[in-house]
Amino acid sequence: MKKKGLTQLRTSTLSMALLTLMAAFPVNAGQVVLFIGDGMGVTTVSAGRILAGQLQGKTGEEHELTFEQFENVALVKTYNTDMQVPDSAGTMTAVITGQKTRFGVLSLNADVERRNCTQALQGTLPTLLEQAETAGYATGVVTTTRVTHATPAASFAHSPERDWEDDAAMPAEALTAGCRDIARQFVEFDKGDGVDVLLGGGRANFLPETVTDPEHDTLKGRRKDGKNLIDQWQASRPERTFVWNTAGFKNLRGKGQVLGIFEASHMQWEVDRAKDVGGEPSLAEMTTFALDRLQARNKNFLLIVEGGRIDHGHHAGSAHKALNDVVALDAAVAVAARRIHPRRGLILVTADHSHTLSFAGYPPRGNPILGKVPVIPGGGEGGAPTYTYPTLGYANGPGAVSPLPDYTTIDTQDPAFRQPATLPMMSETHGGEDVAAYARGAAADGVRGVMEQNELYAVLYRGLFGRAPR
Ligand SMILES: [Zn+2]
Image (cartoon, rainbow, N blue to C red):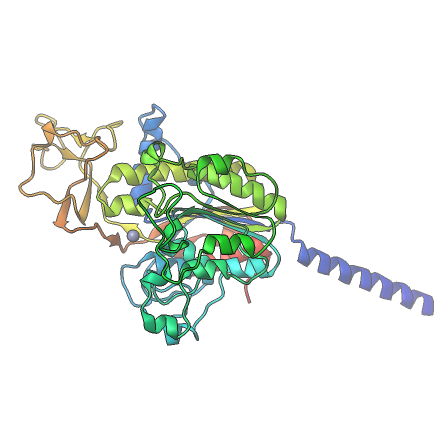
């Protein structure tokens, strides 16, 4: 009897240990890549898909982007707690912390008013990237905007004002009250061993105003506190490397942490990338590098990749810039889809918010998506088009023209062309309708139906840790 009891005890200890081990290493989770197409609303995806197909010589409409082949799809409600039409700060906070917040606010709770430093110091929300670092996982953030811009910043910084990217942008009271700018928060990040890979633009936010930019001799840093945060970041831990151009990027070796800042401000739009002085890697090249480095550091990781300038193309009224950046984002998704086995991790592709892009008229099949709706003599649905106009337009923005020009004489596929807008505005605005989310792999079944944007956090958490967040 006594002997059997001992055996039972041994068996239960063994199964307990096995359960603990299984919980620590869930089979179906651990590698998570979150792609954000900034401003990539559903209309942008439809038009971007056609452009991608036409660039491959097809008619385009039948083309499928890589992420459109993912099985799990949802519609996502993007509003901020205080705004019907949101911005990237509030929306990325929802995705990366699990809680919606106010417009302009980064990873702080909804009680914190915009620009209120005192409230901000009490309102921190932990981010998934911080939780991954605390768990000892590898982490990376890749973007084409400044790395201190709203979407990437929400993953590692907490600020009541998205524009506080460096100390020069902050009011004196906020600095005195103890709030820190976003670039400084990255360098002083204290979870785990810090973010392992950060790639994007925005050197000026890290450099003092006395230091000349390595790529542009007419530009200097923006910091007024005299800190060279790039030097500080490199010195604060061993095996940290900073690069700023393609040559440096291509020479990176080893497993150490990398800060790659390829432009003084935002990186180039994909269509302008070849003209860059120092050379810039593409979003797909940066994603490849980040996956290599993160997979070498730890088998579990969180990588956030933002196609950040889709949004900027739209704001400028340029579908040419925005849609080519959608194609570049999809190329980066294709890299992750090849590298991450669906049983080992999760790929989630979504947008933070939409834009006012409109895809309208009756262009025939295979018509260039940046082209014009031709006049069909005596034909056309409803009122026959008697007037030639671009297929794509915006509800508002810098492309508004009055009176309407004769589009038959205008090349709407010219890179400098701005799509027409109904209401004149310096900058085209975001749109308030739902965006889509596409997911494949571990926990992807959580992406379904009509979701609140902050519910995506639980999906990402489950993909990373193999269990629901507490
Ligand atoms: Zn925007």
